Image 1 (cartoon, rainbow, N blue to C red):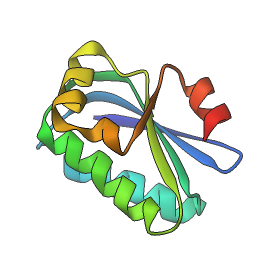
Image 2: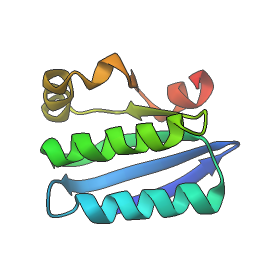
Image 3: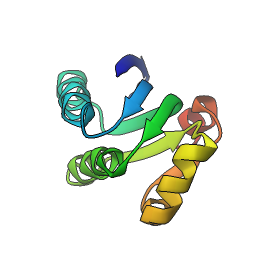
Length: 111
């Protein structure tokens, strides 16, 4: 999995490309956490536009970043979620705690 990081104001945008599964989840966790710590931001936008497959490990990645930032008074949201990934999110109930936006731009202006 490839992750592209961008920063807009006080927000870190992580664009995920590839499969987010048990093989890649630990690396994704580490890269996002390192960037969160180095950039000292409390708002994370996870762009799922390039995610071709996700299993329950991906849910763990999102919830883990949510807990990490919530403890600092921050927030996490997801954007550009494909139908395949959206189904996994819906089944997990993650939308009860994480907001979804259609685009990164909408997320930037909303969080």
